[in-house]
Amino acid sequence: FAYAVEVLVWGDQPRSFPGVPGAIDIGDSRVPAHYLLIIGVTVPVFVALAVFFARTDLGKALSACASNRYAARVVGISVTRMGLLSFAFGGALGGLAGVLVTPVQQVTFDTDVTLIVNGFAAAILGGLTRPAVTLAGGLLLGVGQTMIAGYIGGAYQTEVTLLLMLSVMIV
Image 1 (cartoon, rainbow, N blue to C red):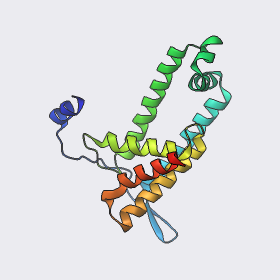
Image 2: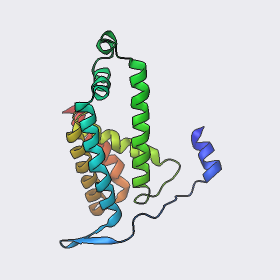
Image 3: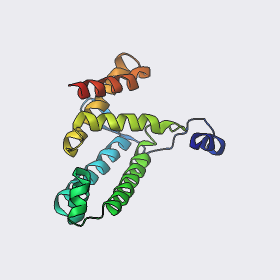
């Protein structure tokens, strides 16, 4: 139903929005300035989240609820409140990611499927409990998809992502 409403309101044609103009030469390659903006925003947000989960009581309470909700409830942590807070954090981070990725990738009414598959595959590849390894898994997945698109064709990127995710899950 939501897809139908999206198509009625905004149409089904892909849209793209301008990002940061220009490119910077690094060695023999040109890197678009918007990619540097993505890196420049991702690193501090990632570090802030790592500090939040490691050093604050609220971050530790969220981690406790994710690890064992019954034990967290026994020590007095409101699991419902932590669930709502994690939903809000996820929404804020998803919104930030959407703003950053929109100039790089055309947006359609079903773009979320690709982003969800890639994000889940990166999480599986890196391990769901180790954020630094998950970030490395996401970077590895992105490089792999770009290589597949360059050598074989862009039509197989999602299939390679799913195959890689299944391989890691089986191993």
